[in-house]
Length: 441
Ligand code: ATP
Image 1 (cartoon, protein in one colour):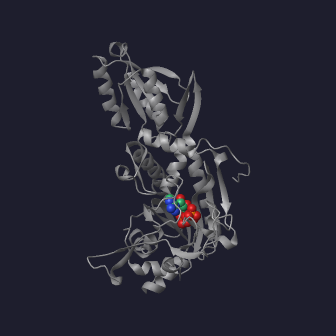
Image 2 (cartoon, rainbow, N blue to C red):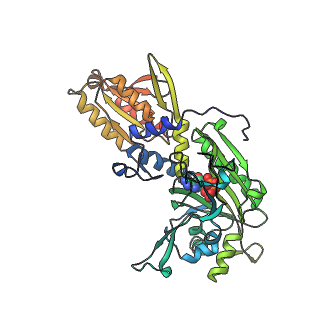
Image 3 (cartoon, rainbow, N blue to C red):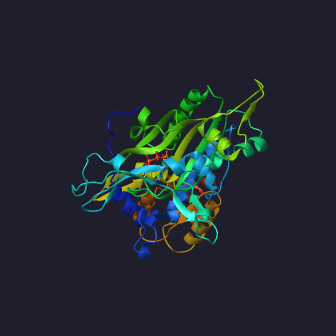
């Protein structure tokens, strides 16, 4: 699973940003006002893509497993949560300012001791807390301070007892959650890779102490497999174990799954062995008992926890980058997004060869039928070649062409995105044909 060779990037970030805007995947937030730094909006195709990523995660991590349940906690939590978790005190990054050009940097990301932009002198690092503060209720005083959660994990720990008693799960079992998190990052950037508002897909997997290392290794494998199965090239994936000095204070071990983005190897997901740190801290700060009764040995204990923590936006960006291909096509370049069918935002496009009846009636009827099962586009504008290119560029796996023969003999042509092979089929066989190709599970 290790990847020592440096792979080639599929493309540059500029090309991805430009395609994302041109085709409606991702726009700059508040663009008509000049944009807001590091904030992005998912457009019509982007929301489908990101939803598919989240759905593929939920399906494999929750629905298909007997040892997992889900939850959805609120973003605002009791301020004591962040005291107990250590975030109030320790969720900081070291910040340095350039005395000359005034730019700010994360000291731990710098490779020189002068400003990388202008060579100016840097200030001493000071710790900067990454949590966003706001006020609850109409009075803006210290008593009303609450925080936007910087991770979804704590919402799971504080519900440990509720989930245990309502589901009656036995160890080992896990709780999954997808939701927004907020961090006032010092240096956001690289498109949606590092933003101040982002979505996480997190699992807290509770295990009997002593079995934690075995479960940790299983989760690393399981999560690596998830990316690979959904089409991410294995040569652009690698595992990076943390050095002991890099480990968070609560973690016994941590391995990052990294992807080779256009800016180089970068973290997609972290899998950490968090021991019993969080449950013990919340028990101490809240006064509630957060223990598990093990019927087999007739004993109470605090479970250990393994946490696979992924970013929905980072994963979406990796799927987008990895799918990107450029191929020579006569005098032009064919851009194709080779998404896995489960990830592709549009699954089928219906393309009538002309805007005349009876083609239109049949094409409209067909697209209506296909919409019952899959996200389907109907496109009758411009030449058929241009329309195929447009669907290739947004990663649609299949185009269904309705031609002049179609209304006569009730057949259509299905064109595959990757091979560009065309198959003529009776209309009645279209849904089963597509189902077999699109629903791979
Ligand atoms: P980094 O070192 O990149 O700042 P981290 O190690 O602090 O990340 P974690 O706290 O482990 O990140 O968060 C788990 C996951 O949440 C990350 O692997 C990433 O996918 C996602 N994530 C964290 N911070 C951001 C961010 N600012 N923007 C987008 N996704 C993020």
